[in-house]
Amino acid sequence: MRHGGFNLTVLTRNAAVTFPAGVTAKVVDFTSITALVATLQGQDAVVDAVSSPDPTLSIRLIDAAATAGVYRYIAPEFSNDPNNDKTRALPVFEGKKQIYEHLQKVASEHAITWTAISNGAFLDWGLRTGFVDIDLVNKKVVLMNDGRHVFPWTVLPAVGTAVSNALIQAEKTNNRTCYIYSIQKSQKDIVAIAKDALGAENWEIQGQHMETTLEAALTAVKSGDYSWKVMGDLIRYSISTPGYTGRLEQDDNGLLGVRPMSDEQVKTLILQISAELETDKE
Image (cartoon, rainbow, N blue to C red; front, side, top):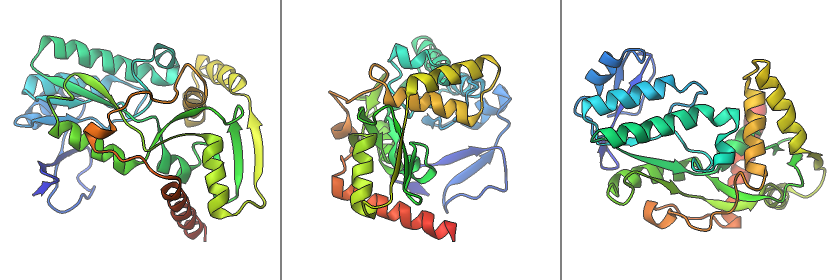
C-alpha cells in the first residue's frame, strides 16, 4: 500500500510491534551490516528517526544504505541547526555531530545523497511532556533565564510533512539542511497564550539561570551521568541561549509545505493537549 505517494517499510527489532495497515514491517538485526544491506536493497530512501546519544547505529545504517544503493538518506537531526558550532559542542549533540559528519563523508565518496531537517524545539511534544518547563495541567512554569529568547518551534505533523516533501523535492533538498518552523516565539510568549487559553489565575512561575544549569549538566556528564534529566538540561540550554539558536531569518517552509501557526491555532493546540493530560490524570 502507498502512503502519501510512498511505499513504506519500517525496520524494527520486534516482530510484536504493530503498524498501520499497508505498512510493511521487517525485523532486522541492527548490529549486522550484512543484514541491514540485505534489508535496504531496492529502497530509494531511508528516514533515520533514531534518537540516541550513541551514534553507532545510525553510522551503521548510513554505511549499509550506501552499500545497498539507497539514493537519499534523511539524517536523524530534527533539532537545532546542525551547522551551529556552539550547539554542536554540547555533549548532548556529540552523537548527532558524528553522524552528520559521517553522512557527508559517505555522500562525498558514494552515490548516496542526504537531507537534514532542522525544526528547533518540538512544540506539541514539548508541551505534552513538560520538556519545555511549561506544566499545563498544574499551571507551573520554570522560565529559562527570563523566558524571552525567541527560537523556532515545530509540531510533529509538520515535521512529517517536511520529510515527505523533502523526498518529493529531491533535487531542491539535495545534500543540504532544510529549516522549518510552526512558530517562532519565546517560552514567555507560549506562557502568555497558555494563560489566554486556560485562564490567567493561579499560575506559579519561577526562574532558572541557564548558565548555572549548564555548569551542573557538564559536571554531571564528566562524572558519567548521561541521564534524561542531564541531556534535557543541555537541550533546554541550547534553545534558550542566544548564539546557540534563535529566530530563523530564512526558512524552507514554502518548499516543504510547512504552514506557520497563528496564535489562535497555538491556543487551540494548548487546549487540546491540556484536555488530554487532564483525562490521562483521572
